[in-house]
Length: 227
Image (cartoon, helix red, strand yellow):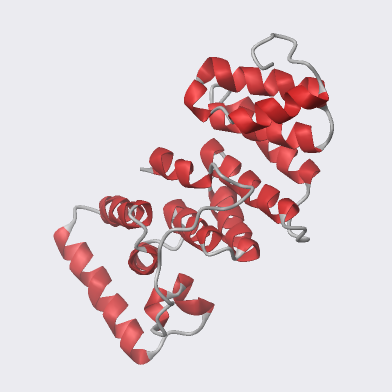
């Protein structure tokens, strides 16, 4: 589900937003209940939920995996409020669950709250630094900040994240494509071509053809693919 979800991140220049209604006022539909103290009603509901899971699943880990999968499904279908609530439930089961922070980072990114997305994704990455796809997601949010002239991300920060992700997962085509975009923006056109062709060799469906044509206007393609 996470790999499917990454397709939601592919467009950075004009972010494609999932269809959503106005955010409800209930705290349970806000990331981490709005990061405020729980009401007596919400606390009772979460306590009952955890007790029910402990009685129904073999372990908390099993319950976390089950509800995380359901939450990702709601994200991929654009039901962001429901997904938020589900990730909040995952947090109630395990406040160190990487998926809960990852999912809430994705949701806040789609709602264009980039600083909050960075906060959640960074927390998830701090809990598990081996998650290279999560690291690329964080890089994409940083790149979005830069493209919107916000002070929450720079090209150097983005490239550092992508570089480390590729050390962990060299065959991740999306990371190569994003690195090509960063190099283009840095006017490092030879590097951009090298990264773009790495993406092309790994997964042509991830190739940004518009970037290739724009790059060809700056520097001819050394491999002659883009004219």
